[in-house]
Length: 166
Image 1 (cartoon, rainbow, N blue to C red):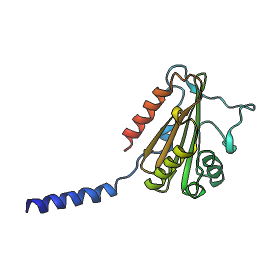
Image 2 (image 1 turned 180 degrees about the vertical axis):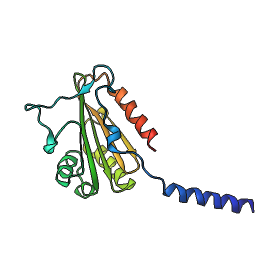
Image 3 (image 1 turned 90 degrees about the vertical axis):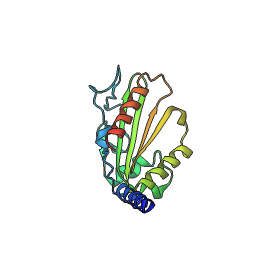
């Protein structure tokens, strides 16, 4: 009888966990200058600093299929995975060198996991990167070769958002 109750409890936990909602939104990963550590600021974009893929601002979030196809193809090689991306975030910060957050919301957790594997296999400089998964989201925090004093602080900010929005 006791083992049957434990089995039913375990089954109930499995069923409940399958209905958990991924509360993270890409907007949670946009940090304004007042939130940023030290001398880190949002990179100013002007006529000489053009944004990729016709992004309208920095940071930029969009569900536009043309933007997503262009933006995501810059870091994902598998075109079938690109088709499963619903929204994309592009943001660049600077503290003397660039720090970037590229993030996508996909159709499922398994797609996000496949994107992470694709990025790990097909991109150089992974030693200057941190990759995160949260439900159907994939987040890539990266930095330039230069010294980035604030990379770890921004990493902590992302981790806090991931923990808060589980």
